[in-house]
Length: 375
Image (tube, rainbow, N blue to C red; front, side, top):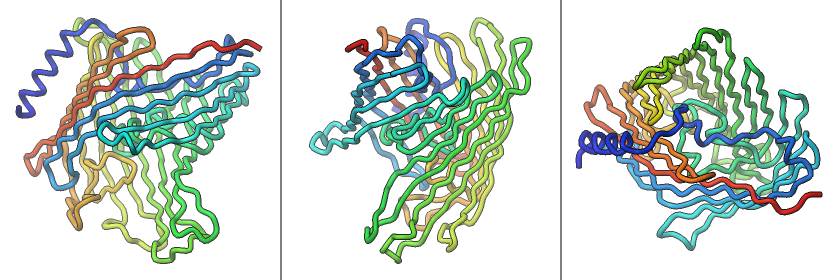
């Protein structure tokens, strides 16, 4: 089945489903990090589970296609001794079907402290991946499925007009004599609301992320220090329209930058720029997102590889200028309490080459807290 027929078929299936609440495409997967007053003094067992299949049909030279099929489950104990503090401890287990003997297990431990009414500090296991609310060219959605554990430190600010997420995700620690490098990334994601009236809102987003690979005590001198910086800033217009087929739309436009800040420049390009514009049309059934990407010499190791100007897997394959027309369709439904079904289709049309890459995914998310004891 070609892409056009597949898209039409799945679109019809989505519309045929029952009514569901409309939100932005990734908002279904964002956690509510607020400490609840009602949870004070209560010990819970919390189960977070994601079952997924994501099929990447990539036909161009920049990225190679593959399929992810598996599950991620994180059981943990959660306790709030007060309305300002929350502890959680448990484990995260990632497994791909067909490779069940290679389960990736991670310990989870998190301390959260509400410093001020609008400011939270998280130390240990932080609210990562889609919770950072970054655009796909900087931080790809797929990390929610296969790299969703982030550990480090995080500051979250949320008020009526400002959302800000400042974090450090420490991916690889090194000790004296280790033959590999330390690896971490630092990010800042923020939205500033400047207009809120008559059913429309105007926001200024500002996003930065840095990936660093190196370390002063790294004993492997053959691997140079690498620091890659990505930035995006722009404007978002969101408006409620409450029509039959469109309930809300969001128009976003970003200027995106890349810089190689390494002492020794080893990347194919030293710096690059891009523009990224999207239009989200939402109703009670689905979110349709249309976008255009124009990038020159753009590199983003944590972003979606389709936006980059070179291939991560094919030696010296490059497209210094990338122009993509993008269409995304997502559907979300709470099939039963605390269990959500999501379906996503994404198409990327390479304008100069005249080729289409696409992905589709089915994701089931289960989140539940079970009462254990009140102290």
